[in-house]
Length: 481
Image 1 (cartoon, rainbow, N blue to C red):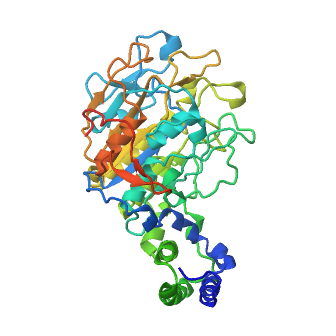
Image 2 (image 1 turned 180 degrees about the vertical axis):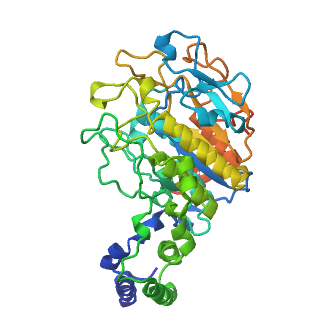
Image 3 (image 1 turned 180 degrees about the horizontal axis):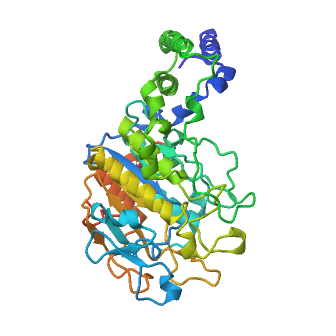
């Protein structure tokens, strides 16, 4: 390293600042994308490149808040009404398997699902359970931000593809709370492997602020185009291209004097930002308005429908890992967390389930996604996983809601080499406890890693250069792959 106070070093710093100063960076904006595209530094050791698995991409359907299993995928029609609720069971395409009446579209696609009815773990706490499910690693209250998301690990080991960040969250701005907690993190892998969130920083991260309508419309035309990809009118793409070439020339000289490791991170940052701005294919991938009315209607003109549609577009463009994030909302509140406390202003949970932004909308959006991926020939190479942190209590509480219940819940896998057309595991007659082997968040993470070609025992370096296993516990879920 040269003396940081030397004239050469000062010249380099001044040149770089002149090339893209703070004002330019704020105007261009897209440099923030680079956080999810930086390569690993040599000081940490190069990542082990895994063997490609059957799945080339993952769509992670993250419904934060605790989706009720008994009112969706695991009805118990023989139980008392205080447990079964008022929703009728309906047939699915799997003989003897029933969903509830608010899930008709997924019922017709049940033969394309590997439904796990024995999702179970030992926590009823939102934050601890969400971090566990997002990372596959158990944490205590002091570790909420320390463990990398599953998508962060995949981003670290595989990197970006086709100019798209290795881990994208749509929109990635929901926050459990109050107060709001940002749990989409790179943890000990570093911020460069946190997701690129298309929603950016939420204007109002605390979803509890403001009075919610009793029955808000589920129909929303949500703008999911990242602001970072909108170049100001006075800063044309031609000017950006000239800046890019000027930067390359300057950095060539800088490499003679400066340490290559530090500049390598700079390379990743600036190259990614310019490439995203200059690539019509990448910019266009984020624009769901390019889709036909028929396709948009098939997903539902809801927030969740639009987010699932964008996930399909991103995977089609080459994205490796896309999280569809839906659960805490400034219009709908914490709508999966159906305690029905007076402050939530919700109806009875079985009436809530019929709303277009609740289970009925989830059913349409998920079915639209699966059918669309299948029709486009993408389902075989795309692992789709529906996840939530836990189920809800079998007994409906006195307010007409259900409370937190880590002991039992339902999730599903489809595509990406999964063995579909089956139900894995079961619960008792009240959907309270699993009667077969229970599978927790670490097992789900292990299954995702296997599908995409990552050995869960792979060791990677943390920010201090220490080797850490991708997972510290968890097994492949029997029969899913």
